Length: 380
Image 1 (cartoon, helix red, strand yellow):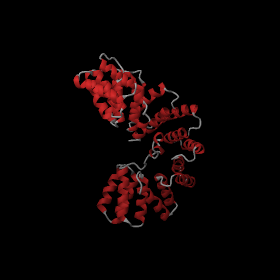
Image 2: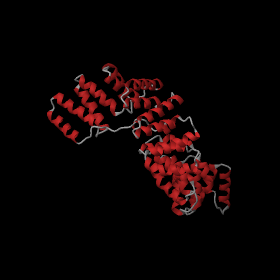
Image 3: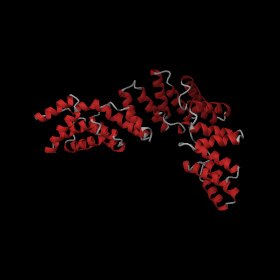
Image 4: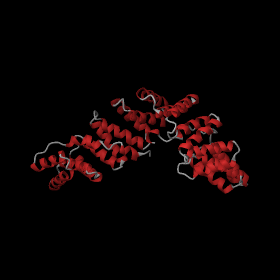
C-alpha cells in the first residue's frame, strides 16, 4: 500500500462537512436537548442522551445515526461504526448515513470495508462528490490505480483547479501505463502551476514509458532546474542517462541524489552498477552493500553484488544474491543466466541444466521503466 496514513490525514475535515446532514427530525424533548448539545458541539453530552434513547428503544434508527455521529466527533470511530451499522440496518434511507459510515471506516483504517459502503453511497447520492473522492483516495492508497482513475476523473471534473487531485490522477494513469492520460493532466497542471516540478517528473516518466528518452530527459532536466533538492529528481535523470548508456552524466546525477539523500537506495545501487562497468570493484561493492543494507533495495543491487561475489569465487554469497534477485523478478533473464553460469563454475551440472531449461522460457529483455523505480510522487 502507498502511504494510506498520509491520505487519511488529508481528510481530517470531512466529518465536519458531512455531519450536519444527520441533524434531522426529532420529536421528544429528550431528543431536542440532544440536538441542542450537538449544535453547541457538546458531543459527549449529546452522545449520552442518544445512548439512553437507543437503550430504551433500540429500533430508533435516527437516534442510532446521531449516536454514530457523536461517537465520530469524539474520535471514537469503532463506536461510530457500530452505531451507523445499526442505523443502516433499521433505515438505509437516512441521508448521509452511508457516507458517514464509509468515512468512519476510513478513519479506522478499515479501507477494504469502507469501499463497498462508499460505492453504495455514490449510487444513492450521485451529486455528492465526497463518496467518489474517498473511493478514489482509498483505491489509490491501496495501489488499485485502475479502479481509482474513473473516480479521480469525476472528482477533477467537480474541482478542475484542484492540483492535488490532478496530480493523483496523473500518477494513477502512469502506474497503469496510460501515459497519454498522464500527459494530458501534466498539461492541465502546468496551465495552473507552470513551475510544478512534480508535473515535469510525471511527464518525464510518461515519456520514458512511451520510449521517448530524449523528451523524458528534457522533462527531468526542467524539474531539476526548478527544484534541485527534491527527492528522486536527480535519480530519475540519472536513470534516464543510464538507460541510454551515458554513464558519465548518469553517475553525476546519482551523486547529486546522494548529496540530497546519502541513503538513497536506488542511487547507491546504480552507482554500484556504473562502478562495475568501470571495473571499480571495491567501490562497487561498497555502494551495493550500502544499498542492500536498507529496506527497499531493488533487484539490480542483488544481481550486481552477486556478480562481484561470483568473480571473487564467493559462491555461497553469489548464489544467495542471485536467488534474491530472482525472487524479486522470477522472469528476469539476466539473473537466471548468472545463476546458471555460477552453477557451471561450481560443477553443479544438474542445477546448471535446471536453470538452462528456465532460460529457454524467458525473454532476454527485462522491460522495466523509470516509473517502476520511483515511488508515487504524490505521497512523497
